[in-house]
Length: 157
Image (cartoon, rainbow, N blue to C red; front, top):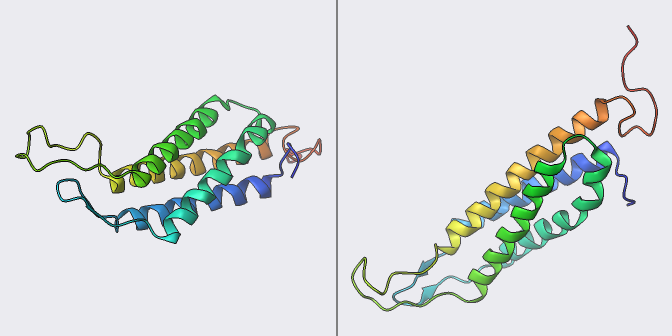
């Protein structure tokens, strides 16, 4: 795929983002993490596959965003936020935190949110990016001189 993507390619990528986000949400519900006991359910291959699919999709976006035209800055920001959320999630899953049992609000409280919550936040960012990408693709497709490589996009009166 070249830097200028077609409407169908961008829509397929938005669908892939949404599907991977759904899988990430489903897997996030199954993560178990108890910092005081150290008990944690390690992520399965489905979660790893969803994170890999999201990373692959985010890696393709910078080239395509420029070809969409319009106000692509929010889309670029959302892609960056998703990339950061995936990095934070990967770190949380790689090194689960262990905290001593010390009253609910004592020194033993976890220093970061539950990995399932972090996975849910990453999924929400991916879903938001998928919606924005699909919307911007439709706008770019229907704009004069849009993604159709110079063919007229407006219907004659």
